[in-house]
Length: 242
Image (cartoon, rainbow, N blue to C red; front, top):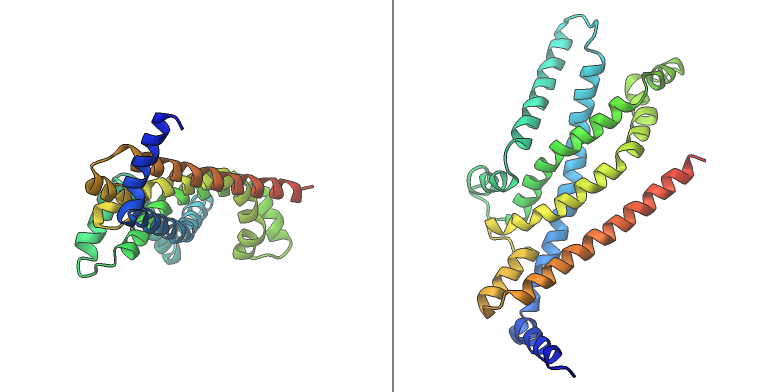
């Protein structure tokens, strides 16, 4: 066996096998996937609600009479715009630190706090993605739904949102991948994610090359896998149109 392969083997055994340091990466991988999955769900729910408020307000803004209900709707739209401005205008790591050390200062469930923080952050970006998709659907589709006797909620549920979802699916997939990579800052609040697991191993072995390369390959593998799944979903959606 070539000498450089022997050196790599020795480094691998020293870095990961001795003292079972590979467990830090396994724990980190589990936390990373857990945070990404549930934060993604929160982001989609929050983003869809905000997008519906924003798009509904924009579509009904022209010629609408100022009633008390309209005033409340405008206040709700203003709150959504403020949420988008604040969340998109501040770094996610700062939001995470505020959640951990200020808002949930009495809790030390770092994973749950990270899920909430990343979910709220992702929701702001998902909201704009959904809003662009909803606004891209022709108004004739809404009018056709109303002519069939559908109410506004039914029209959005059965006609507008399914069409918007097909349009924004690639952007949603990209946001999910971005969210997966953004979780690498979760270590700032003492969560053992993939990146934090690598830092712990580096601190124990004083060897940076092997842990960082393995973590980079892990992230790359996850991104390729999720991209493949989204590609299959896109093809299935295209086939359903025929």
